[in-house]
Length: 79
Image 1: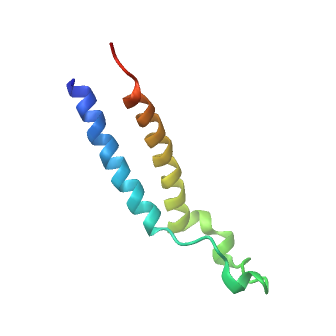
Image 2: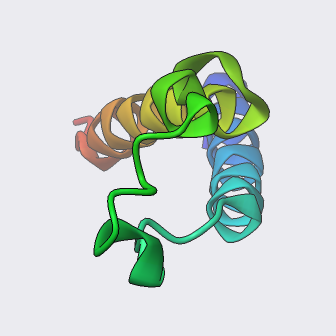
């Protein structure tokens, strides 16, 4: 195994662990009983993209893309 491939495997493992932790840190998407009375449209709900939850969601998407690309690159068989 070449040094680059080993480094890619290490980066892949770090992405896997980080992605798992970030997904576990996020809150559920269910609105609960507040959606019945219209309480889901609060200031917090409208500005969720600027909050920590919004940043975690964007970071999760970026890590998922990196995970998929790196998985494809590592799966390429070399002759």
